[in-house]
Image (cartoon, rainbow, N blue to C red):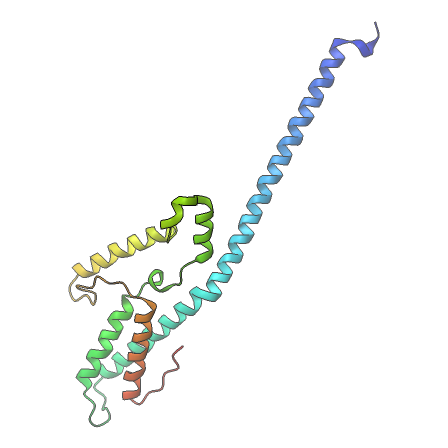
Length: 194
């Protein structure tokens, strides 16, 4: 009997080929998963960088500057320093506090432009069910939490948002910016508002 015709030899070759195929397949799958993960991480970082630079930072900076300016004006008006003649400090202080309270109620999620790319992606994956998709699940959870915070604030004493049911919009922020600018001009200040 020839050793090449041995049933043990055929079985060993089959096992070796089978093991090689399994190992090769396992490495291929692992490499594929690592490639997908690396691709997602890369796209996620690029998306974060773009969103931060084009949306988050400019909006945050603008609101932060306005809050800082109005806080300084409130401190100045509360200090009792003399004002230009004909200027009612009490009225200006009331306006400054109203602006400050309104700025405190501004939420990023309310004034940030919609993420059209994320909405389009959701529509692609949800098909017909995506007709009502307007926010991501994460953003909706954040808005729900902010609504709860607003409710808690309205329950607190002296809340600026007492009775406020409407959320701020970018138009509201622009209106507050105009009011702040007028207030500053009344005091003889020139604020470099964004």
